Amino acid sequence: MQYKTINVSASRCYDIHIGQGLLAKLGEFIRPLLGECRLAVLTDSNVDTLYGSAIMDNLAGSGYDACKYVIPAGEASKCADNLLAFLNFLAQEQITRKDAVIAFGGGVVGDLGGLSASLYLRGIKYVQVPTTLLAAVDSSVGGKTAIDIPAGKNLVGSFYQPTLVCCDTALMDTLPKDIYRDGCAEVIKYGMILDSALYDKLQSLPFNRDEVVARCVEIKRDVVQQDEFDNGVRGLLNFGHTFGHAIEKLSDFGVSHGEAVAKGMVIASRIAPLCGLCDVAAELSQLLEIYGFDISCEYGADEIFDALLSDKKRRGGTISVVLPRAIGDCALVDVELGELHALLVKVMG
Image (cartoon, rainbow, N blue to C red; front, side, top):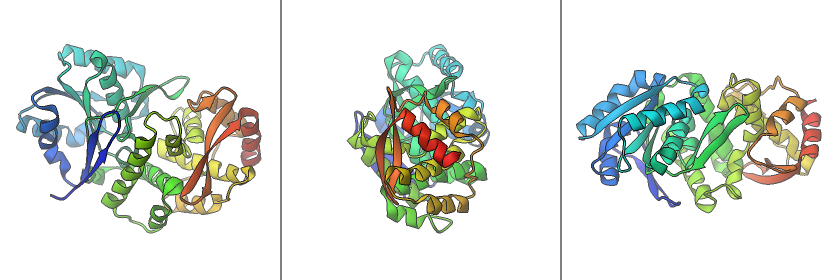
């Protein structure tokens, strides 16, 4: 079985394995890292239906005593109630400091599982097993964990690196088209911010999934190693997210993360030339539409502005926005809130 391994050197060093059929090797991968321990698997209702038995059988066959906790699928599950419920489950199962959590699912499960692991007993190990394209290229790598609260998305969280990421790309074969498309928004983001060659490769569909996932992970690895705690260059990974998170919040998460990021990237690209940077909005919009994204936005400038005031990238009277200088080259620009509102009015009416 062929697979690629990418190493991340951060506050905790770990490997990311990428390839088809790797779920069957999970127990083999984690044995040298975790040794004898108990495992608590966190997953969601969709993944559990498809692959819940497979992961539990694999762990049992590898000699592990594992328990499982299932949350409803969807962004609404990334909440304080489920965080506390899973922490209580870990305590009831008598999970100890030598044991570990396995986050088996998409971004919601990965964020919730990672945050739970960082808090339980002041920190236990966890393994990311992403099942969506979005989680594979983005949320499973880099150690950002979080839940949403009514005031905004990802406002309660921690930086906590996993012990291992095991990405079985075959699991993506069963993804609904809209969920797979959500991941494509993040893939396009990587091309826009740091890799014009990747962006060019994405012009032709379908792309080589294993190759593209690995390249996106390499880009994120390089950024995380430079700025693990998001005080500088890591902010580039938020291209489209400042406005995208506002759209998610306004829609009560009726607009998916990928769709919101696609809309957010277009808004940022329309603002860029007003700030003296390049105008790639038409080209980017065309590519996003090829992938099936609806890049229109039903919300006005005032609504978007009010929603992003709670964004965690805000610093007093300014907010950091990622704007393109060219395809494959983006910049972090600190914009005063009043100026940002005026820019939004110009591009959104």
